[in-house]
Image 1 (cartoon, rainbow, N blue to C red):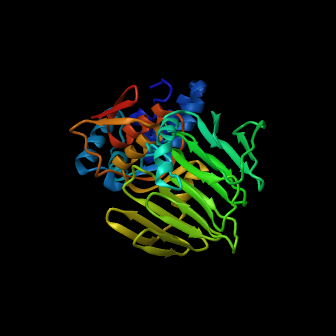
Image 2 (cartoon, rainbow, N blue to C red):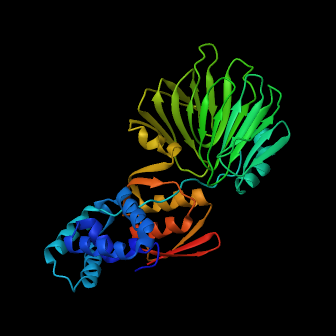
Image 3 (cartoon, rainbow, N blue to C red):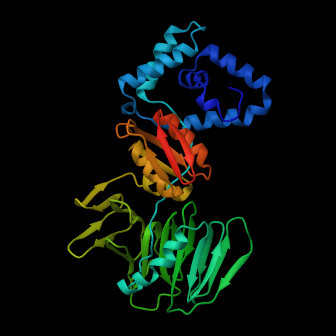
Length: 388
């Protein structure tokens, strides 16, 4: 088990982290002293194991017994029956860990102010979301960026773009009345400061259309995907966020909007202030900590812990009893993958709690997913096969 990255697949390591067994504590302390080159991977595996848990409904009794027997066989040479029994309780209660990386989707186009514009822009946006680079389309020209960007638009409409880790700035001059389109593909995120001081965090696989300057009676942006936004207050000029399914109207507030094209449910989560959410037939007013979801079954409003829905902008995702098949769906969105799940693989009954850290290491993510779900995986290009 001395190969790098194999700690999380080692029965004794898992058992030790779950139970704190004293014999294994001695064993692993000696092991790492004798193999100091593995210390970074060893410490990292411990951190990963602490970050994410499979809840107790994630393992059936049969699966728990199978896992118990596997570990029991691997440590049969040690006499610790009482701790093995303790492990069954830990496994059934769900203590498995790890750091994953992720989020996003496969949307294909941007939202324009009119249906004609939307259709005209469908191809270019869809093509760019399949690319690896961020695109900023301004007044007929397009700038390309390989890393996450921070975009600043001043009151005159001048747009300044800085890539992550770079002091070099790209400056674009645009007419105030013209609309800009920021396309953030899979695996990227960006920040944006609009001309009125409104701050936007744009998630992966998202498209935001915004004017160089707000010159009309209202401030309007169009969104496909997900963003967190802190709207600058302006009592005379309401701020409107338009998506395919609804429109959010505010004057100054903080909220999250998720409106991916391939998602069954879209949502608005309010952090501060008050917003009005409207479509052709319905209107809802939200107060802080309210979440409104919109789907085929209609609209639903409830009070939530808003931190769960904002954590993505800080580099991780919070999960709360999330089905493992939903985790796969999010991985599919984020990495632009296709999953082929074996007919005998059932993931719907397994759920996950904790933090999932955003990362670019797909193999690490899939190894962790396979470990959590009790499956194996193989890769063939953009297709990943899941089996027992």
